Image (cartoon, rainbow, N blue to C red; front, side):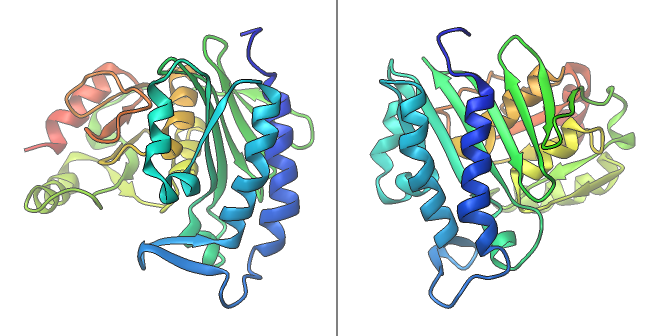
Length: 274
């Protein structure tokens, strides 16, 4: 990892951006500072735009020759996604994950940054600015929670157990009917409890801090999942696409199922899917 930036430097950029750009807008957004992208459930705020704009050159300065794939930049030009299959290292940025929550004053929002090189995630961070903590993972070096106080703790996922005894996040939003309706019915008996926060980053944090066992997502936008899947893997967990093939950062479909271990993954897959 010596050729990649120190994760503490990345965390510093994220913290400074959150403090100067995002938090001053929390519960203070003005008329005209919230816009729809593809519809009323897909929003962008001035905090999203300005924080991505601020972090982009700072991250590139940390790693000369690197590129940036930011959620808002891709919204304007989808060809930027092609960088994920090239040879240059690529930063993936979600400037405000959980924008709908942020826009309505809900506390479940975060900032996510990851680094990918040759289709492999090597660094992942999820910053919870209100919780004053940042989950950090370096490939092969484990996952850690770094608190603003300076305290650090190693992260590990909950142990696997039968699906009917597991709690986790289920997102059915992009599933086609009638599969969506059937899986919702199956979930009532398949798992003990399921929830949805509307913020993938906070859902990953529940997995990393022992508050939930699993998560499922039908759509694999890289800014939503590259940081979280690396963190979860480094904390001892198992994830794969719905067909159990490995997940790569440039794959936008095929879904993601995340579980404590492979046996728990198989149990969830068998019980949730028709």
